[in-house]
Length: 168
Image (cartoon, rainbow, N blue to C red; front, side, top):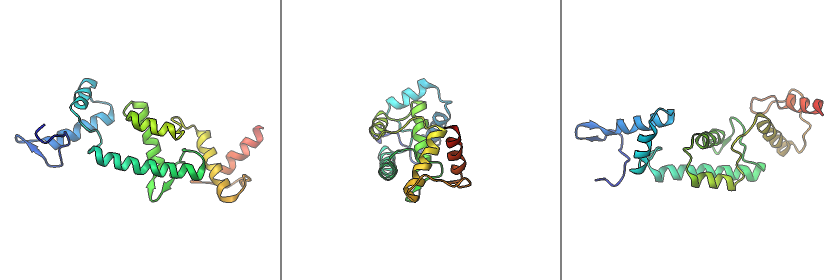
């Protein structure tokens, strides 16, 4: 509590011990699910931050959330397809991370609430992902007549549409 926070910077040593390394180990074990819950609880009560500095983490999260909202405005949904990049940032990976953190119970309530207000889907299915690609195709081409061999972001969108039509 001497410093007023639990965020030991890289190479920080306390009483001859590499505190920074211990902090990194706690974060790694939490991500892997190997940290005992009682220890995680004690660290959280002390104000321990799992993703580094709170201000830095919040700023990055807010920036990605803004990109998600921009994506939603353009596409009409929050299901960024695999490999989708917005302004040089892997939005699809960030979306997957939010879902994973929600499943694990590590996503902050305030963040989950903001995502829910944006109609974020916590469980995107294969169908949802392909539908998102179809909407993207329609936005770009103005129609849904996808050629049979057409791919979007490495996925066989044309084949998927053909299969849907066959099932109807």
